[in-house]
Length: 483
Image (cartoon, rainbow, N blue to C red):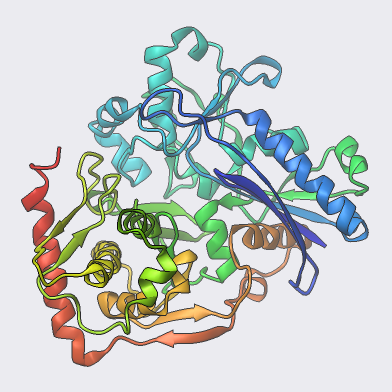
């Protein structure tokens, strides 16, 4: 048996996998986020341990025999969080999370240093870890001086579970301190934030053993000797679960935010377009990722405004036919990342007239999110990545109309997997299997069966292209007016 532990922002999810990769059981426990000031987002690392203990207790109660047979554990985790520990691994302050924007000034200052884009291959975003430490140095200098180690969220859970200070390549790539091409900490980038390699955890590959579960904890849940894999950041773990590991394979996630993720067999940075170029969770592999900040979040917002719910709104649309004439929605409700790197931009409906009813605006929302993902596709193409089709995951895939619109907007086939849990916890369990058994990733990380493929309608290609070009013209037109 193998156990995947996914530390998300809103909860911890555990998943038990047998040696045939069948899901045996799962358990979860919620987490809360604190927002003490505008733009701040924090969690107490102790709550991650408590939630994991709760989920493990549930698994022991429901599936004790299977839990006792676990040989390997893999981690997935929310990325970019700054967990600061001092002497004796004491947590010094609440973790500053990925969606915390307080360090935007520090991020701009670091990004102005050409070494960061040159070595890390990425823009320094306010959500990344390095600017958070720069903020702590500027605003909590006494605390900064006490920092012994900087850990990412899942790696603090690993410290509790194994006693080891370890991270892995895919998560470390999102700190702005990693030489992503060399897969090693950069002393130059760390020095730019007055830190050293000694304050960073040891690095392993995601499919390597990082340590073993502490004997006292293993005994508590009736387990024996258990290897703990390096694991992965959440998107890379999802890619492992979906089998998106070979160059040319890609998935699109219609979650709260939107992600277009493509696996690469070489390092292909393109920071100018705000594409993330990160290490993958397997050795000698990388990935590129375009991120939009509002995907299903945009539909949920529109549902609240219009007095419906997402399922009802999308059911009112009869098909994924031609785009709404002259009506465009810009989904920048929380700013945008790829390709604009603009935290201040805000969304808009453009082209409203008396003929537009609720269903027309709903379709415009779905089209606007799909065109934002097309922006990411174009950015990845500029960076040298070829994508011929994508697999679709996330809550938005419940709408067949949306998947049809997405296929037309991307002008690519969109594959919908058969029902199953192929997310981050599943990918984490696969990494536990790989590390423990020294297995071949090609035989373990296969793609799920496809239930249906949504093909682009060639008769609508020109209309969707015209609508996309109109969409592209609107960002520069409104950017100065929405700040």
